[in-house]
Length: 247
Ligand code: HPA
Image (tube, rainbow, N blue to C red; front, side, top):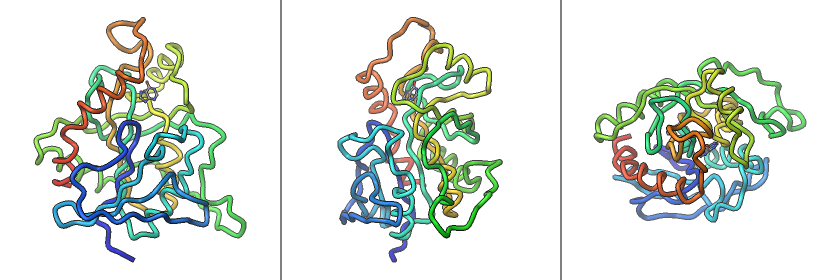
């Protein structure tokens, strides 16, 4: 088993890790099935870093069909202990406009019908893991510090609302999420974070705001297009290599 300093799971618009050197490709299988695609294991400034594209490298998997268990188990089997999840999201509250990077500290799960625990396997122990603080505090602190060191603007904190997708939300749904206390909305934050906790992995989310969520921006009639999402993700991701190096 190799010693991996960090595993990175890439979301929409993030299908590879710039600057990863000497890449080995692994095609692992796990007791939960196959992950979304190959795990690319390489070095970044002398540290071993693993990368997996959550939706597959050709973005072929919708959020509810991602095998989150297999993705995390595959990274863990390769030796990962710490996982940084890159999640493309919509912004709901004022501080989270397009192109903002954020490291949320809370989440609310609105997803349904996804396998959200490891406990379903026959013979597995029933776990009731503590999830009051859904992201690992030490890893979050390191992400925030790395952003500071790299000179990359990052909002520290915020609540991520995980919706089912693949469609975007209605304005009424976003208004409800806002009332619930969500700052960000995305489709892949859960069950990933909960499964990471069950697996004993350190896990933090680096959210990349691609758009104002429905009705949340200055133009309430704005139509969200995939091209806008991808353009904003590309622009917001420019600081990521420096942040990851610092991390
Ligand atoms: N809603 C849900 N998921 C998203 C959004 C959104 O507005 N933008 C990017 N991912």
